[in-house]
Image 1 (cartoon, one colour):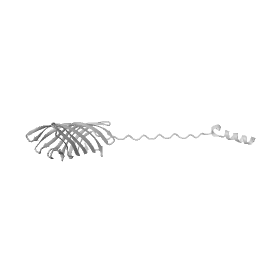
Image 2: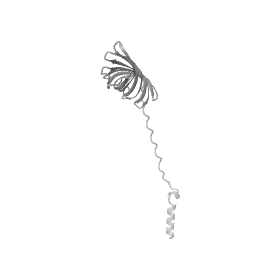
Image 3: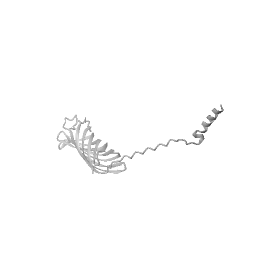
Image 4: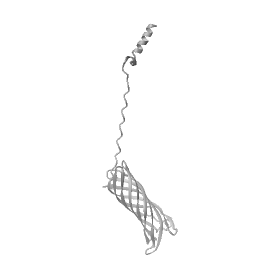
Length: 212
């Protein structure tokens, strides 16, 4: 019995906590390396490019005639200039589009939208290689009425879009713009003027451009 008690006491005294032996402590985990910040593309400076889009909308005259457009296409070119401050990008852009196959559905096919001119300011936010932007501006549309008349309608535009850099100089983009225009047109060349209360002209365009 005494021998058993002595052995038990010896075992307790020989443990690391009592005998002053080393106590193993796990190493603190190494902190994870912070991810590298995403590089922001440089959008500053002039740019130019080409676009292809689809057109839709509606038309209403003061005396009550109204119609939707038949959907058509627009091929255009644009130039602009960007100023960049950190990730904020702003600037101006001028574009011209030649429009095809856009006619009033209730007009017999000879009331057509022929071209669009857009001058707008843009402001956006650069995320990596993408520039997400909004735009506001002034638009003009050239019309042909009854094959021989026509004229110009003008008004405001609102747009949103995204450009994505595919190289240091080249970018591709997608743009949506809605225009509200009004004015006076001629039914025939030299006479028959009438007022257009409003037109809504929407475009969805693919863009390819170069920065300089």
